[in-house]
Length: 202
Ligand SMILES: Cc1cc2nc3c(=O)[nH]c(=O)nc-3n(C[C@H](O)[C@H](O)[C@H](O)COP(=O)(O)O)c2cc1C
Image 1 (cartoon, protein in one colour):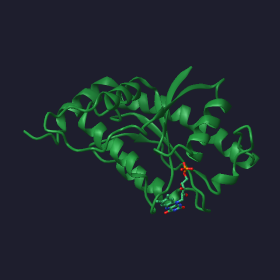
Image 2 (cartoon, helix red, strand yellow; image 1 turned 60 degrees about the vertical axis):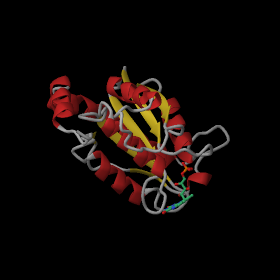
Image 3 (cartoon, rainbow, N blue to C red; image 1 turned 90 degrees about the horizontal axis):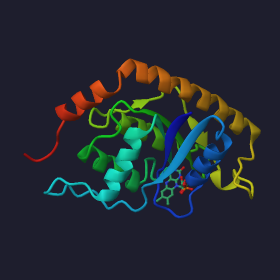
Image 4 (spheres, rainbow, N blue to C red; image 1 turned 120 degrees about the horizontal axis):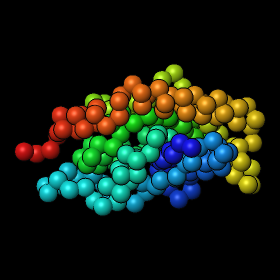
């Protein structure tokens, strides 16, 4: 069974994106094992002189490296992603760059109609930067609008159409993980790229 990490893209204690990832974890438990990962306690990135990332950052980076794929669920703040999610990527670029060649699927939930679509575009752009160099599943979006009303009291998505959409996107992602890992040849590309790029102070 494939092992995925689900990153909750917010530091809010009350998050419909966290609810969405928990639902995905439960709904697909026979198909994939998903560990939910929080970034809420990460410090703000400050380009430390000793060039060391905090332990918590490295701990999450290690989990990402070991996972077959990553699902990121983002809220939308000011038409973009929350600061803490941006901050996490800045730390990751400063550590072992765990997203290099990592298959990623993006989901998102927002209170409005558009379901985090504008935040997802920004997230895709960040993931696609040569510094992060993730392998993002193309031509796919999972947008959960009106997310405050989307779940029942057991944390299940109420809308059957949305569940069907999730079923399709997860099938696609499992295939995408296989194809991507064949394409990138895993560790060779990772090591080469990690050594190649460095924004560290000399
Ligand atoms: C500072 C702030 C900015 C927001 N900006 C947007 C926005 O640009 N577009 C939008 O659809 N919702 C916006 N919202 C509402 C979000 O839809 C909602 O907070 C978030 O996506 C829900 O995610 P969560 O339940 O995981 O916290 C904003 C909320 C906050 C607190």
